[in-house]
Length: 312
Image (cartoon, rainbow, N blue to C red; front, side):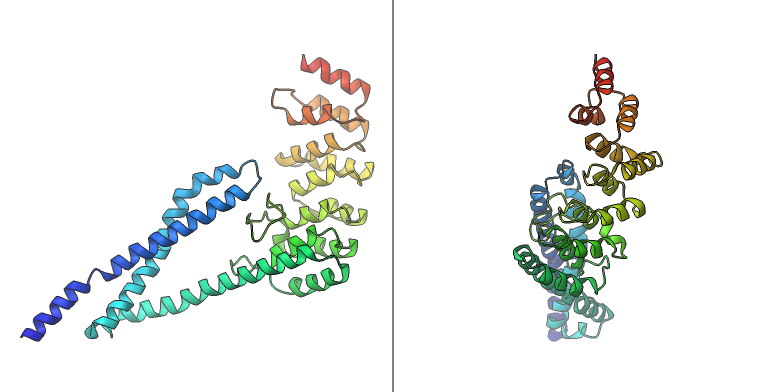
């Protein structure tokens, strides 16, 4: 009788363990996630980066739920170790399976992230085009999945930024058959040290001074990424006939203003297009096209007069 009562006391005493471990692990997970997000927001130079602070409560909440669940499973395992009668319960078996799957996943993610960060630092120091090409071949042959454990796209991004990457290598990156090259990258001091805006890989290719005109023309004709097309429209390597094609493409989407901004900046933009951009501009206080046009040194005199008249 005393043994039964003692067993009941033990079970009653250890009953809240899963809830305690859920709270502790969930709180730690939420704090780490929030700290990481704040660090990334501070590191980013995007004009909209500060909006990330608005997501902190959501990040904290979902991190608490996720890690709290894992903490609860951990508490059940601890409870099963202490209470012998609990060791054959379905809850304990399920918790063991979850922990056995989840913990290696998170550990593997951290290891891969650390290795990617080290490789990125090595690539930044590379000044040998052949070595860069070999590194690209190694990582481009792997998958570019959206799982967090796949950091290859960050390695390709830093190769695209390297000033020693050859024109041929940049052309290979431009022809990669994966939608991820068009995705904006999550900003991180470890993974995007030289890309604090988190620009997509394909935009880094277009901005590299070593890129060939043929690669830029290929991107202009094949890409539907209007942020990239805006970069191309502002690239002074682009000939007038391609700029005219981009101007026509700007009329096909609501994001066409990105191309307009590039054309307004480019000194090679044909005068008739600059004239049309000036006519389309509403010249309000916040009109970006207007301010860019004003600073274009090749702006035709009649367009300058048009801007001055509309500004008053």
